Length: 58
Image 1 (spheres, one colour):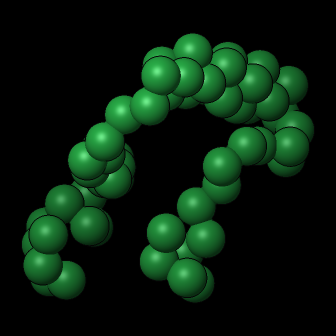
Image 2: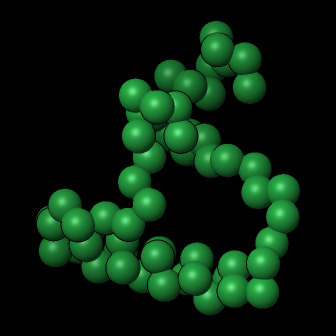
């Protein structure tokens, strides 16, 4: 999306990357990361997996 697109500033929109390929273990690994991050969020911890580095842009 272009830099000035309204989605970037909307609080009710989450922008996620497009995944152009899949591997055999893609879905099970994704679910494990989601499960870990959900439990981390519920416990109000900071131990998230695959954190986005906003400074680096990914």
